[in-house]
Length: 510
Image (cartoon, rainbow, N blue to C red; front, side, top):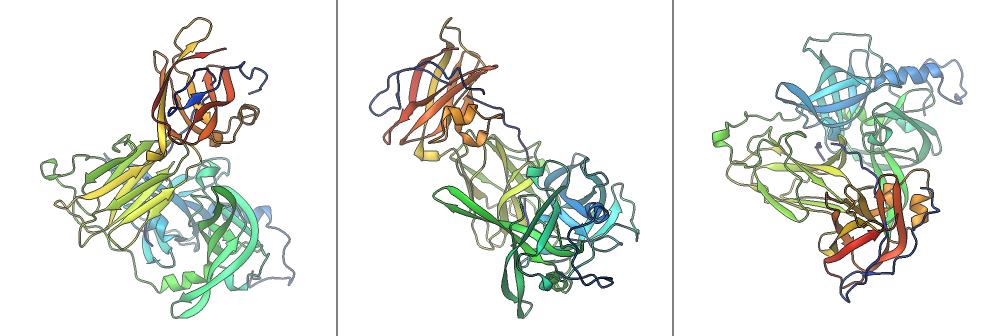
């Protein structure tokens, strides 16, 4: 277990209907019918004055915890400015600015920016820069200390808002839990969730068996990592760390949040100091062997990288970060494999969206692998970075696949107005996921892109190329043009032996 690694995207809505015969080994089309015109688109406090447990946090407690629950931004300097690489959450636990978070949020970050919330309706404000003082990779916890303000001036405050540590061993099944943090799904402001203790797991830590995991049904998503879980007394009893998802036959049956017990902070305090710092300096261009450089951040990332690409590149110095981006057209799995890591080095791999780490691989071996099922099509960043060492003579190999790879086909065609024959430029042609109907998609108040298998946009002459169409299914097909749309169930039939196919001219009967 170690660090992490880079950004964002807004997906436009898409959608169609048409008619055209097929070939035996090509997708077959049903005769076009009328479009769907009718569819609208615990522990008591040490100074407790009562032995009874509170029923809920007070507004004053919530306000105080909100100010102590911070966003941790892993950043790097790029052309004189700080560029966000990824982000997570943390909790100030002393008035002098000690912060607890996950190691995978903080360990390996060139610069750690601490952002504080003063108004829950506004994004947190970058306020301090912190450094790691202690960390434990196996427990996945790290302690930070605020050092300077954003201008580099030393900070010696003793009045920072903080959350007192509770006794996580006192928690029992069904005890209420309240979680504060900055998940990507919650937007840019602090997010609050409540739940209860769902279970525990013990493990041998620091030489003896103790509580290692607290399970909870509280809603935890990417970005909550390292955040704040408190009991009804407002004391820190856990650090949100991960989510275990129960997926069977491609269906999500449920999720369980994983918290690291606050009592493990004592173990981290006895762990080593700050992680090994990367040494060396950026190579001059004349000595840089990597043709993709500079690709050290979002703005300079290499891409869009095509599905099926195999990249040979270098981590040229220990602070080097290689960023790539892909633009998926489906919600099918993204897989990334990092091999040929040079002997004597240790590289890590991350998949990132909107500055939130979606998946990461940090094996100590010579290979890293990520397979991730996205909730939507869009832009995703892939980051390769060094935990230890670098090489300008031995390249790594990065294999990237998405949109179904060899199990899918490409469908092309030209969208035209059925009445005038005019090519329809800038429309969106797509297919719904297997089993999803036009009514389900367009009948909702807002279009849910999670129901879309693949989509694409028609060019200036109305031509479109739809990649990532899985074989062996019939699909509802849609086309959206401005405020108009057409959609037909089962319009596109793709047999198991289908090949890449051209639908020819597809007339849209608006």
